[in-house]
Length: 216
Image (cartoon, rainbow, N blue to C red):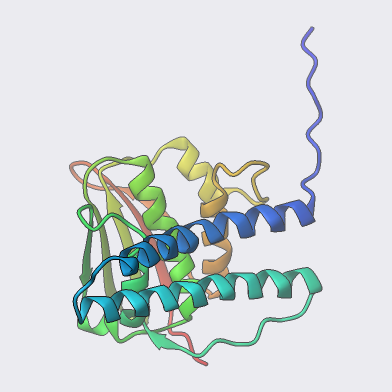
């Protein structure tokens, strides 16, 4: 006879802590790398670009902490001002190895108004998953599709059962495995969007997010 240990209900406070720690890793790691690069003798305008990216990631980390504080106190976060998608992409690209990440963004997609912090979180999580769990190039393709912005992260992997389970689960995971995708799904839903994973032909994985226009 095999005894089955009952699963404890997730502690909301612990989930908030785990979620914040998970979401802070990319901006803090990127900020550390940018500061180290700034400590070297960088020519202009490269030094100014690095300083701007460092400031952007510091503000991004602050926004994550602000979201957590709002969730902990039960207060609604202040509405963010819409920015063009193109404004979020340099900070997103800085979190991934430059030799692996390619961007293909149409002009209409680059001008699409988005929620700045939520869009960064969505893309950083999806691109981070793609670079960690696959080998080879990763592409972010952004296009306008009717009344929606379509963001596709494409890598050489495949739609695994673990990925599909993470995208469809109704409750947060008990461990960090799948936590990033859970966060992405909540952010996409909060923006009235959709997310799906599909196999590419002849090979590859595409995780695709559709977002309506953000109006603030």
